[in-house]
Length: 214
Image (cartoon, rainbow, N blue to C red; front, side, top):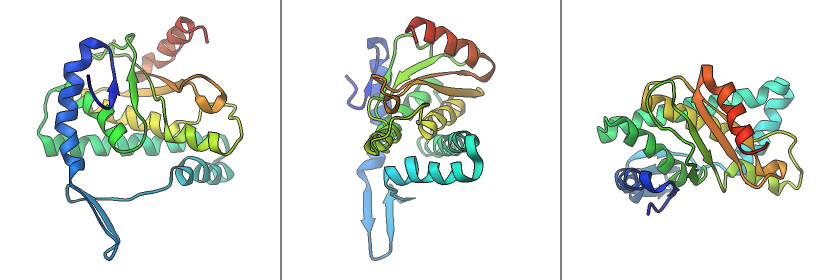
């Protein structure tokens, strides 16, 4: 079984291969406080507290953008996910689209965003029938909001949703969007997401909400 991703049995070989490709990058983790640098395989990384991004940044953006804050954070996540995908695809030389997509779930775990549980409803094919239904059992965004002691009225995992959509869009060459349909910060049992081509996302969300009686 894969170490970092929970997936249906038929996806096990793919996810194990993705782990074999990505994990070695994170073996070369170096911290040099005298220079103020952290690198992963010689690439510069920066550590932020989860609360600072998930809660403090959102509150600041809400004071400026109002309800548009969530969209802004989602777009930041999407741009970041797409950029990371292009970087790792170039570094590894991987061309296989399914493997490229699977690498994103491994990066999510190793990068501290969340672990991924891929649900069997998913149809991970590079066309308009693409459907990715997944849980994030320990999303850093939901955890940070829960630690404030306040219950959210709407889903809070905007950056994680955007990051996944950005990565998968690059992997399959599709215009994909992700929507969180349940969230632990709202008191739900899990943080669950639906990803599909942008023009089909609304219908796919309705399908999954009906399936899960939401």
